[in-house]
Image (cartoon, rainbow, N blue to C red; front, side, top):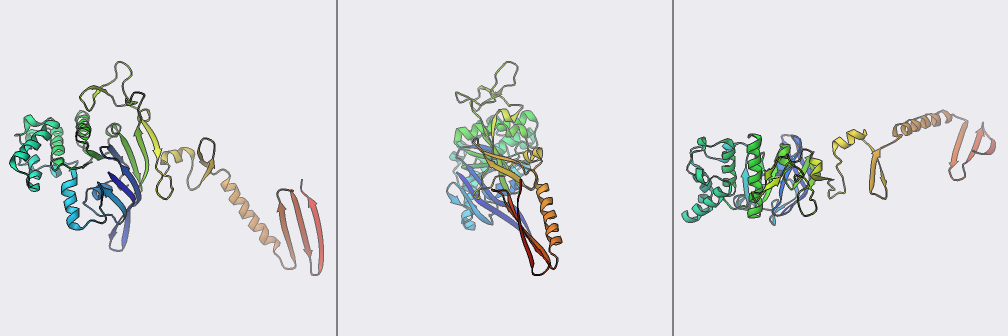
Length: 365
């Protein structure tokens, strides 16, 4: 569905260049519900803009539903944006027109697409029923809560029947209960319509409920967490005793819960990019005291990464050796030191003065 290979985006301001994406690799399967997280400035919004056809990459490959976005003409990119992608923004003002009713907002993209009245009404009804707002279709936006406005925005984002829905912080301006309802709606729509949903979020609870969480750092994918399933196909964070909070699953059946510990529900992976590089999570490196160098070993269980032991001592020894070499390099006198490790033998040749030569060999024990 989505393939990003070595994706690069460079912004130029006068004589300055800023690398927003520096060779990002990402694969998203059709119908997947995933989240993208990362610190501010990591490239999340840039990636969303490229996938949505709002911006063009500088280099690399970005393929969505078989279309290489880098190679599309301006007209073709506009057509792609209108027909293939739906958007849900954090601010309701970017999603909805305030003086239109719920139903009118949902039908507006269909009018632009040229759908007839009957087809518009049928599809709008199906969408509003899916998000639980059919009974409020004639209400003005001012009569809706924040969560209802965001669910209306989701219906608007699906009005053009996209294959990809991009949700930028959809739970950022609502309370916890409303955020849960929005995530449940997105999951239901993903499973009901086979919709691919890519969500950018800083909400830890929201990111813990998707199928996969990809972390972007410094313009590259650095790690990802994939939901772990127990035997029988149930989520690893499913409730195991009384008193645990229950959530409705995609079919409306109580049983999905949010684990307080994300590690209990997900497998953690680091991403191997096309150049064979691994981005180890920063907290792992800090815990081990690894900064600029690391020692790597191949073991029976896999690859072992650990601090570069004795590196500072080795550097100091090299400096002392250089000083010693300079002290011996005086006119009329030189010494050549050769160390044979296997036999532990040192051959020392001394040259004293001019024309006087003496060779002496000693064993080193």
